[in-house]
Length: 150
Image 1 (cartoon, rainbow, N blue to C red):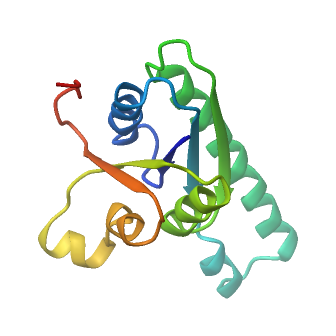
Image 2 (image 1 turned 180 degrees about the vertical axis):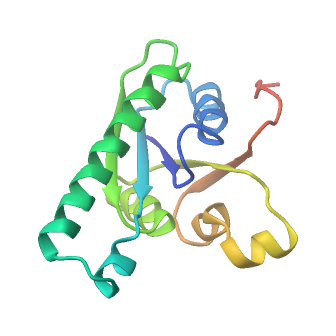
């Protein structure tokens, strides 16, 4: 099984990671995982009611489900069925947790390849994922050329 984790906003850089995974392991069972977070913590500190925050979270989940549908329609999976899961939480924790639960053989993660101050301030989901799972990890930089087996 190949679990393709997406923590970055859909679709980029995750299309590249998905398509690389499909080409690398064409007979594998594929599952796309997308983690998202909103500004719920800031809303609790503001002057918002719990029902307003609940509505915000509902609308955010609805928006992310639609993004996931668009993303799945846009990837080239050669007609293979692709499982998917959308989960609220930190991307690296969701991706590695699901990979462990599903006993994934490979996790594919897209990255934009930030360096310098942006990398220090924003961190890297791919870097965190690389440290955690008990399986192989394929990190694919956005905008890289199409992956082809030798």
